[in-house]
Image (cartoon, rainbow, N blue to C red; front, side):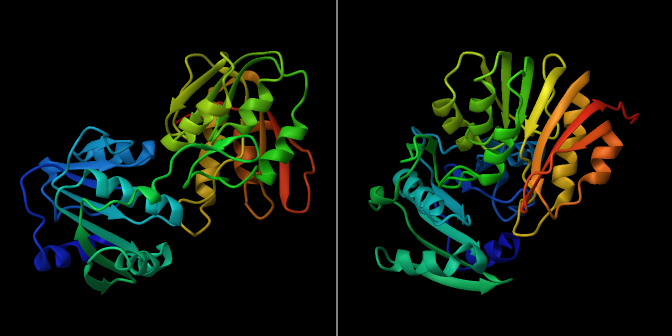
Amino acid sequence: MIGDRLPLALEAVELGGDGPIAVLHPAEAADLSALPRDRVLVVSPMATVCAAFAARGYQVAPEMPVSQRFAATVLCLTRARAEAQALMASAMQRTDGLIVVDGQKTDGADSMLKALRKRVEVGGPIAKAHGKIYWTQGGSDFSDWQAGPALHPGGFWTAPGVFSADGVDPASALLAEALPEAMVGTVADLGAGWGYLSAHVLTRNVAAVHLVEAHDMALQCARHNVTDNRAQFHWADATAWTPPDPVDAVVMNPPFHTTRNAEPALGRAFIANAARILRPHGALWMVANRHLPYEDALATHFAKVVDLEGDARFKLVRAERPKRIRR
């Protein structure tokens, strides 16, 4: 992890300067103690990551500020290659000194190193803890790597690093088909992504739809895709978000991992919050992969759970009458 490799890199090379240091897309638990905290700006599209680092005393932002220059940048590689390249383009444009690149081998550390060596001089690498760290000088033209929200050939806006960036997620499509035409009142879309489910809900006679999404870039895309004035956008942790008033319905295709491993606890937290924010006679409409063990969580938080069958890959559920769990 970066906490194992960054101190070794800083022994081999000096960041230089006394200006701000950008740290791009670190993991929530990343150890950045090798850097002077008062100079660090943690940049992450994830509301949960920003909240965690802010609680530890760091300055945070969802994007690299366009008008700000940085003495150095630490780029933590992401699994999406196009997203990692876009981050490098931003770092090159706004960094006066060194850019330090860190990543696990499974996150493309080797392929990024190979790509950089074709364009610029690269120092290192230092290999440790199943990953690599290396560095180069900022200021080169990487504009061909820039990417952001763009109109997909399918007619919707997505961006590198956003869930289901290359097409409509089949689980969400299945849930959209199952939603009743008679939906009314206020609806929350927990983990709204780029807005596919919300767009379908807004074809009904509903009063409002809250799009709750922790990924800032996904929410930017959703603002392009969902232009109905009944839509309200919230950059927030969907497992903890609270609406102004209880809602009549929740729709969701909850994420089930933050790493490569399945984490059913994340989906269970979505279910718990759905029950918490619903009106007493409200309903949850949810789709999930067949293998995910959500039945106990649904039974714990709802008095009635209806299996809508789904298909071979996905289960569809309507859960009614949320229980008020004493904490």
